[in-house]
Structures are given as structure tokens and as C-alpha cells.
Image 1: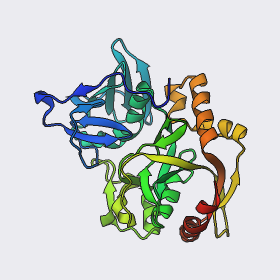
Image 2 (image 1 turned 60 degrees about the vertical axis):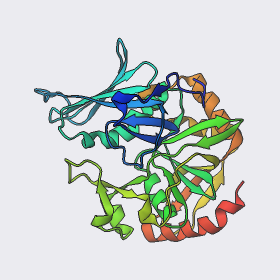
Image 3 (image 1 turned 180 degrees about the horizontal axis):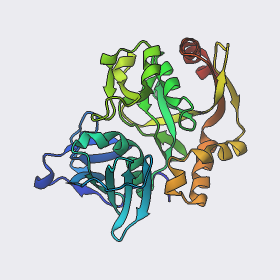
Image 4 (image 1 turned 90 degrees about the horizontal axis):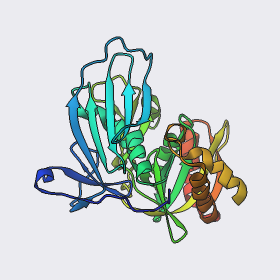
Length: 330
């Protein structure tokens, strides 16, 4: 894989596809039969086509006790399958170069698949199109991207919300597609929604009317989407050169500011390797992972980051970080 390479297919919108809505998403032009929660754009050519295929019957006597994900090779390409304990199933079928996704599902509401489509499903398409994706949130300040990396549940979205309330622009939540242009890492924009646990959103004084359901048929789901306009800043909808990377390393009780520790270039490469999105199931080639992380670490500063415990201390620390720490770090 070569980071920043072009996709193999470049499709043109014809009469049959004239009613499709098209988007700029993760650096791709996407034509989709499903609303992708972002303003549409006018394009003639697109890199990815998302198609509704068919409704499926419920699986009888499902063997899975939770949600089971399967990524496997097929005769004509690849498929990503999600199955749950109730017999629900969603199948995302890909052609070989990741330029087409065909969706079949048991649920009768196509919007139920949007969250999964925008995250792991899109990550798999980007993987097939030779695009590198970091498991990170991207915030933009003065046109430059700041990435926040960490495992699921570590608090990337909470920190992103605190920064967005303090002048940073939301750029990408959870997935940061990073290309290399003339040795400069460039992060592509995602969609203008940030996922937060409902109890965390309430701590930010966000009301129920300001939250959007992630799964329309699952109203009790514990997380919701917050649109970028709720933070008082515009969504940064475009590529941004990468400035700094922060790897979340813990929370500190009683702290009143962010604490950072710079990671030297060699160690930074090793520190970034675990954060290729979906590496445990997509299985990125080791030599390509190492090359990509080396390029990133050679052209951006990487830090460990500790943040205060609690929403109010976090918001205060984010304000200090916005006005002081960013400018003092190279």
C-alpha cells in the first residue's frame, strides 16, 4: 500500500445515478443511496458508490450472544458482516478495489446502518483504496489539524467536545484519513457529527433536543450524535495539514491543565503503530504500517497527553490549551 495513492476506479454519474446524493467524505467523492449525514456536493466523477441491495430475513437460532463482525474475502471482492443476538444481520459487499459497497440488511430502516457505514464500513473501503486511517479524532485550529489518539473508551470524543467548545473546529470523529503530500501529512475531513455518551453530553449542558439519535430504531442506545454547530464553531470541511498528535495516556484527578510529554521520533513510530484503524481485523501489511507511521512521526510532533478528570476541569484546561500550549509546541 502507498499512502496518498489514487483509487483504481473513477466512476462517472450517468442518467441511472442522477438521483444519487454525492458527498466529499474522508478525501473521497462518494455517491450514496443512503443519506450520509453531511451536506451534498455536485460532482461528475466519484470514487465510491454506496448502493442499497436487498432486505434479508432474520437469522434463525443465531449463535452469537452479542454483535459479531466478520471480514472475509469473496470470489468478487470482500464482505463485512454484522450479526447480533436477535438474528439481525447486515452485509456490506465490496468490489476488489473498494470503489463500491452494496448493502443488504434485515432491518427495514436503511438509516439504521449509517453509523456503521460511516465508520468501520468506510474504513474497509478506504483500506481497499490504499488510504491510511488512524483511530483518532481531528480538531482544526487556524487551518491545521491536531490529532487525538486512544483506544475506544479512552475519551477522544469527550476531549474533542471540550476543545470544540473552546474554539477548535470539529474535523473528524474517531477516524482520521491521513495522506502524505510531498512529505507533509494531510488529514481529510470526516462528517460534522461527534459521538458522545448521553450522560457525558448532559455534563456539557447539552439538552436532549440538541442530540441526534445514532440508531433510529434503537432509541435507548447510550450514545448520541452532536452536530458541529452546537459547539459555536463551523465544521472544517476540507483537508488540513497535520501539526501535532496527542496519544491519550490517562486522567489526573485535581489537575487544572493538560500535561504533555514529547515522544522522540523513533519511539513515536512504535507509539503510532497500534492506532491504525481496524488493524486487528483488516490486518494492514506490517511493512506498509511501519512506512506510514515513520512518515507521520518524521513530519509531525507526537506527544503523550494526560487530561484533568471531570468535565468542568477538562473545559477549563481546554481553554488554557487553546490559548497557550498549542503555540508553545512545535
